[in-house]
Length: 418
Image 1 (spheres, one colour):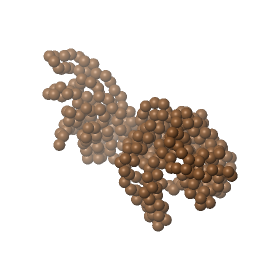
Image 2: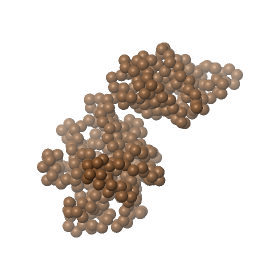
Image 3: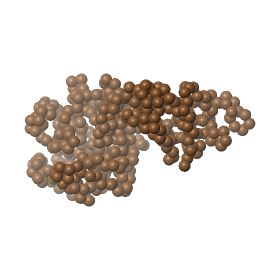
Image 4: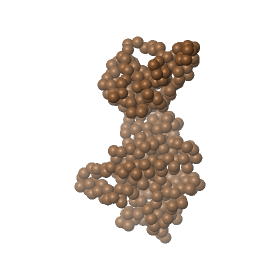
């Protein structure tokens, strides 16, 4: 069992001997209506001359922090039941911990916002080891962000009156079923894809800035209760709906699996827990949008699809379809939500072949595995019986392949390393 040095202190100042700064992008946390301070100090273990780290957490709020979990990396973790108002705690990981990062979470939707770093200055040397260094610390300044909602992939926080924060997770869902396992690096890919596409498209959107590898800040707006799906290929749910007579396609359409449509079609759905395909008449009947709004959404969504499909084509991919969401901002329809491999199907051109299931560089890889193993039918049967579908365990090879393909897709489309 690895040992920790833990000190509860009443004072605020700390004198620290240091040799280097070990910075970190920390998992963010905050407490609504509370304030507190966190310091991360590199210190020198005099016996081994090994630079280690010290984390100082101070609760300057009026309420206690509870169930605090500290992760130093390298398998070193520590759990604290409570940190009283005004209390400060000093934690040191084992001396062999490289202190590359610190992750902290607690109850009440806590997460840290920004880290600041000051470089050390050497004051003197004695013999073969340093004896005096200027105080150095990394201070984590907390923002009190109000938790708003948690979706299938994103957690949403209010930043201020005008903006909200999307925190992308590694969670995955398919066929409206949430899975217990995560897809490593998925959140980072989705976050950076959102930044890439919002900057690439000329249409007005709600993107403000990327806050971290997994967070973006966007403008608040009233979302329209419609998901704007554009299909460029005869694939996915379109195939079964066409076979069942639930939807029509333009005359002369090649209805071979994965055949390219003569023109992209607008195929919207409701925005709900289980999306329902609708046409214009149904959208107007349900008062989801006005006639003018529907026409604008159809035209703009198809234009965006063509723009994105052209970019994908230039780097060796086929954009088979796309889902977009819009809202009202300052009286104007504005592109919202996020855009990434959870919102479209992406196929490599080199392996594309009409009449077969395509290689997926998106969430379709999981859908295909579920369908091939009978889980999609099990989900449908459970819902028909009034039960909630149970998610199976995703094979590790599928998880690894999804991570690999998500990263490859981003690096090719964005032209930069993740």
